[in-house]
Length: 314
View 1 (cartoon, rainbow, N blue to C red):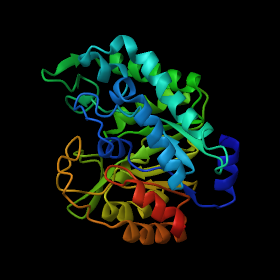
View 2 (view 1 turned 180 degrees about the vertical axis):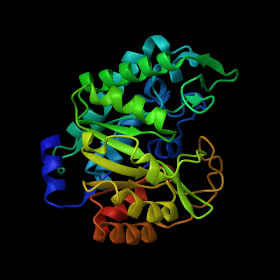
View 3 (view 1 turned 45 degrees about the vertical axis):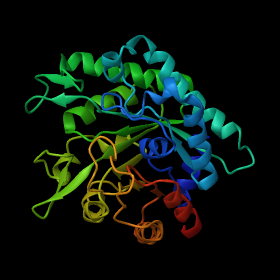
View 4 (view 1 turned 90 degrees about the horizontal axis):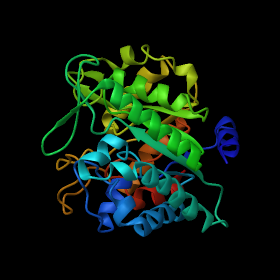
């Protein structure tokens, strides 16, 4: 399946990635958990996870993302689910496979195995200490964090993900750990950067002072098939794309978030509107595609209507 996807990208076809996983599950009635966010749905609501993938495929997605953004061992252990780490990550891939297989009359759909730094916080500038989110923040070492990421990458690869999707919202240390873990599997890997606008500059992550331009020089981009801007506001995406293009000439993916005022780990208020409508989002996506972006989708807050609008417009 990945060969077909890669050919489409090389042929300059527009590819549509799915929308937000946690937002969609939350809207389907699945409770979120600040320790493992949407990952607990793999145990409690597997049928809903499968249906979510089916809905995104029906809406027009060419790629579905496994519900594994927050399912590394350090996310599951505080909830007493550490022993289920292998089972739940394999289940996530299987549910995506089953969703794809149930709609064989649809266009070819690739499965992206998602990995992130969710729940890992660097205490200091580099690798001195890490913590995982819990009511009492339990300390883990940098070595443990890297081992957990390697374990998860291997699980997703062995379970049948077509490629691995690095969704790192942190600094470059996290991104390098994820890159090492994913590239070691031998699968194709897509690298993501979260960016933000601050004081007129495009910076990396939620809070680092590192400019996006500097971070792009701190990792060997040629090791990756696609580089993306994700979980980034539309304004920061527009500002970040020219910066990214200065350092990367290959295929680019963008899948921004809705930039809502009630965002923390989850959207709290279902009545809070997004700052962009599906139609406006699709019109913006059209401009990105005209500017050379190959893959477009959505992150937090960008739900089914947005993916439908992308399919209709692009």
